[in-house]
Structure formats: C-alpha cells, structure tokens
Amino acid sequence: MSTAAVLKKEEQIVVFRLDAESYGIDIFRVNEIIRMRDITPVPQTEAHIRGLVNLRGKTIPVVDVRVRFGLAITEATEKTRIIVVESTDGLVGIIVDEVAEVITLEPEDIEDTPSLVSSVGTDFVTGVAKRSGRLITMLELDRALAG
Image (cartoon, rainbow, N blue to C red; front, side):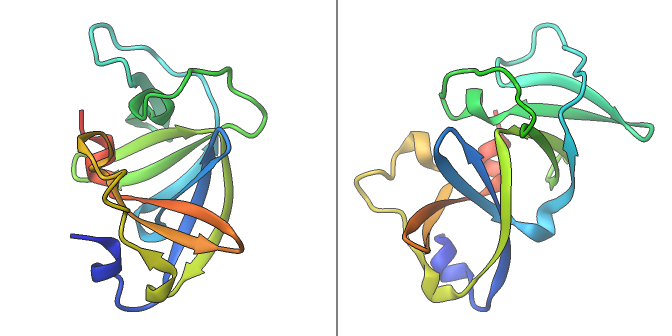
C-alpha cells in the first residue's frame, strides 16, 4: 500500500539525511532524538545491528541505516544522531547522518514510488515527497528495520 493512498490528511514528518539523500518518517513514530553515544556491540548479530545503548535505564538496540540501505560506512560527526523510534519490536535507535527538519506534508505532496525503482531492495520505500525542489524518500519504518 502506498503512502499516497494512506495519507488522507496532513502529517508531520521527521526528515533525516544519509549522504546527500533525504528520508522521511512519521513524527508519531519518533520517541526522541539523541546525540551519538557509545554503543555496546552484540556478537554474531547482522551487520546493520550496531549494538545496544542504555537510555535512562532501558536497553535499546541500535540499527545503522547506512548499512541497512547498502551505503558506505562513515565516521560519526557532530551532526550524527540516533533517532529512537517505536517499532513493532519496541523502541529501536536508528543512526542517521543528520536530522534536518520536521515538515508538514499534504496528501498531494506524496507520489507513489516510480515502478522502475520499486524492487525487492526498496520494499520499505512507500513513496516520494516533493518539497522545495527536492525529493524526500518516505520510509515504511517497520519494513526498513526488519532484518
């Protein structure tokens, strides 16, 4: 099901960046945004699972979305953040290069993913939003986090 079909009213979207690309997730899925911190590795987990962080007494798994999306791994910068999101498996942290902004999208701002780029590798992309001359790839969070 496409985002365009689901989005019936305006929604607020958290926009984050990986490399030069912008991605969006529903703000209601975001629990909080924190600075990068030490992550405890967990042996024998999938490559995109970076490890665990302690957040006010809760242990939260952290996913490196760069690895999950097949991008080159880079060093954390001052702008690197962990977005703590609510998933079907509970709270999960996702590492992003930068949290850019929160925007409000109208249903007409989102188009279905073009069929040429729709593939097994992009099954977590639900649509593309156009905003101020740039494209924001809308993510189906649970599918993007699933191993």
